[in-house]
Length: 600
Image (cartoon, rainbow, N blue to C red):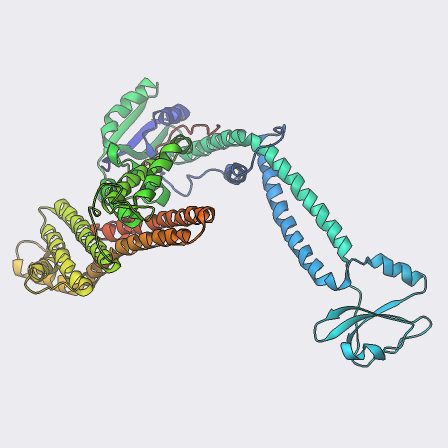
C-alpha cells in the first residue's frame, strides 16, 4: 500500500532553529522539501570529502586484511588509498609498455648499451645492417656476424671494420642501436613490480581502517544532511520556516512530539495538491516484503499516484522463474544456498533478496517435481510414478505444452492489470474501457494460439471477445468527459480518439502476449542444456565425468539467474506495468533523520 502523505509546514523562532532541526532529526518523519532547491545543497568541501571516502571504502571492501592498522586519520587514509589506486593504474600501464618494448627488442637479445660504448672507447665501432639473406656474403669487413633473422627475408648483421668503412651491398640498410636495452627495461619492471607489491601490502594494512572510514563517512553525511536541512528553509531575522512531507497518520502527533522535545513551533498539515508529487512510501504486506529488496536493486519507485505492485510481482515472479528454471535440482539449490548464507546476506543488508530467492526455490522445486526433472534426470521412477505428473513425450510436445502455459499466464497477467485499472477508475466511464482491454486480451490469446499453436479460431468465443472488448476499448479507453449537456458530442469525440489510438495499442497487446513465449523458450533451453551435460558426462569414464557435471550444471544455474533478471523481471516491470499504466516516476520517502554509523 502506498501511504497517503500530507504537506506539512513548520514555523519556529529563528533562535530555535538548531533545536527544531535536532528534534526533527530525532523524530525522523519529515521528508524535507526545500524552498529553494538550488540553495539546499551541501558545501563543496564536504561533498568532495564524501566522494573521496566513498571511493576509498569501495576499494578497501575488496582488499584482504594484512599487517597492522596504520596510525593515520580516516581522511589521510582515504587520500592514501586513492593515491595508491592512481599509482597502481599508472604503474600497470607502464609495465604493459615495458612488456611490449621487451618483445620489440627481442632481436637484440640481452646485450647492454654500455657494452657498445666500452667497445667504442677501445676503438671498435660495431655497426649494424639489415641485409637481404642472399647478400650477406657480399659484405667486406674485418668481422661480419649475422645476429638474427628480420622480416622481409633479411638478416641483422653486426659489422666491424677498424680504420675505415666496411663495404656493404647497396640494399643493406643501417640499423641504429635501440634507445634502451632489454636488461635495463627488466630492471625498471622489477622496481615497478616491487612498488606495486609494497602498495598492495600497504593497502591491506589500510583495510583495517575500513570501520573508521565508514564512521567518518556517516559523520560527514550527517553534517551534509544538516547543511541541506538548514538551507531548505525560509528564514528572516525572527522566524524559521520549513516545509515537507509527512505520512498523513503522523501529522497529528508531530506538534505534540515537538512540544515534548521542548521546541515551540506551529505545525500545519495540508492535503496533497493535484499538481504536487510527494515522495512514495510503501507499506509492504509481510509476505510481499522480499520485493522491496528487488526494487531497491532495480532502483525503481512507483509514483505517488501509481500502483503498489509488490504483491502482484510477488505472485508472478516466482511462478515465471519456476517455469524458466524447470528443474527440481536447480530449485533445491535456489532453496538451500540462500538458507545457508542467510546470516551473511542479512549482515550485508540483502536479506530481503535472500527471502525472494528462497520463495523462487520453493516454487521451482514444486514445478521440477511435477515435471520429474532433477538436474536433467527423469526421476519419475524414484517418485514411484510410471510417468511425471506433467508429462510430454517429445520435445515438440514439451514446447507446445510450455507455450500454452506461457500464453495463458500472459492472458491472466495482462488482463489482471487492466482489471486493476478498471477498479481504480470506477465509476468513471473509463473503467469500461479497461474492462474492454481485458476482454480484448483474452481474444488476442485465441489469436496467438491460432498463429503459433495452430488452434482453430472459428467456433470459439475468442472472436466475440475481440469484437466486444475492442469496441469497449475504442469508445471508453481514453474517455474524456466533455460535460453531460451534449452526450452526442462527447461520444463522437471519444470515438474519434479511440479509433486513432486503437491500432497501435492492439499491436502492442499482441506483442506483449507473444512476449511471454520466453517462459517456454528458457524452460526448454534449461532442460536441454541439463540433459546435454548429463549425456556428455555419461560418455566419459567415471572420474572424468564429474567435472563435466559440476561445471555444466553450475553454468546452467548461472544462466538461469541471468534469465530471471533479464526476462522474469522484464515481464513484470515492462509488459505488466505498461498495461497497468505504470511510469515508475516516483522518488523514495527519505525523512530527515540521524544517519547511523556504518562501522562494523
